Image: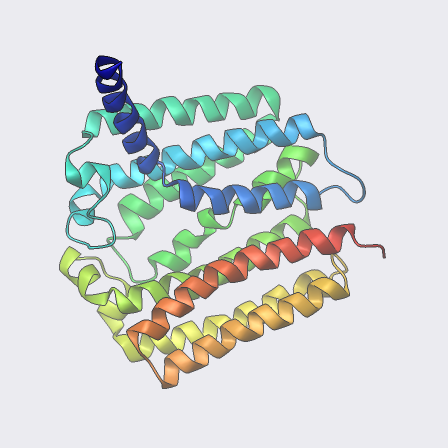
Amino acid sequence: MKALRLDVHPLSLKFSNYLQLTKPRVVSLIVFCAVIGMFLAIPSGLPDMAVVCAATLGIALVAGAAAAVNCLVEQKIDALMARTRARPLPRGEVNSLETLLLSGVVGGAGLSLLYHWVNPLTMWLTLATFIGYAVIYTVFLKPATPQNIVIGGASGAMPPVLGWAAVTGEVSSDALLLFLIIFAWTPPHFWALALYRTQEYARAGLPMLPVTHGSEYTRLQVFLYTLILFAVTLLPFASRMSGPFYLLSAVLLSGTFVTYGWRLMHHYSDALARRTFRFSLWHLSLLFAALLIDHYLPS
């Protein structure tokens, strides 16, 4: 029995390292937003649950593959930052070839699943999202411009569109509203993180906004984007996609985010930036949950 445990442990450790490469916490939020998109796409009742399961797994696999490519490309940068130096590649627990093979196998499986069990449109949109994040954002935009988060945010805003396409076979204007919410949410979310990690980004040579334009300018941008986000989150109600419950939730959640942005601008501290970053995760999760609850409330 002792020998058996010694044989199993390295396999378990290897699996854990591979799992870390796929950034499961990030992928969970991606999948959550995609699943919400699937349910919102059906005017009444429930979507085909077989399609929901296949699409969820396929999108999760491709998102995990994109995350692995991101870890592969940024392994030297990750080694310089406290937030990321414990990842498997900087620690030497896995190598570049393993990571590349993992991404290819996992991503290929996800795309195949989407093509054969969901629909070709979802597969192509998911592939485009993969390229947008793993190649365009990670390889080209992130090291080149302080607007990397704004431009690259398009790929991060795709999950509800993918979910919508999965159950309807098309992309509607309502799906694009969901896209717009995440697109507007992304800059204040990531810049709040960048504010209290400025020195690490500078040491890694990444031109994040607080590195290139300073803290005061970045804090102003965070506040302005929270105002934009506040307005954008009202659009589902204005377009009659959602009702009063969502409207109240959006006002409370986005109003709180604006308050955080205002406080960051006038009373900055690293601790406040951390709280803002953490709240932004709750903001998006609760906002999409409110959309789902509102969708099934009696009209």
